[in-house]
Length: 100
Image 1 (tube, one colour):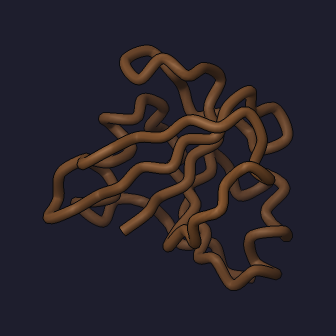
Image 2 (image 1 turned 120 degrees about the vertical axis):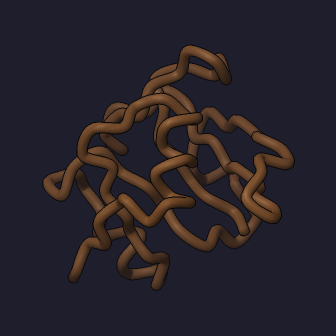
């Protein structure tokens, strides 16, 4: 499963989830059997060639229409900011699905 996150840096340990319009990097996280297998960082979303399964954004007010138009499910992480916290919340189904 590939998860897309807009982040403020490409430092895996210190990066924070940010609004898609303010993202300095995009992370594609390859999640396999509940564990992070690999994280790839991209400067722009256009560089990503893989089909992502879900995008996680920090707010329902974030600009999410490009993802909805591409039929990519959007989840909201209202309080989680670190990659580790976001993935943990995803695995425990603590994120909210954005309804279009």
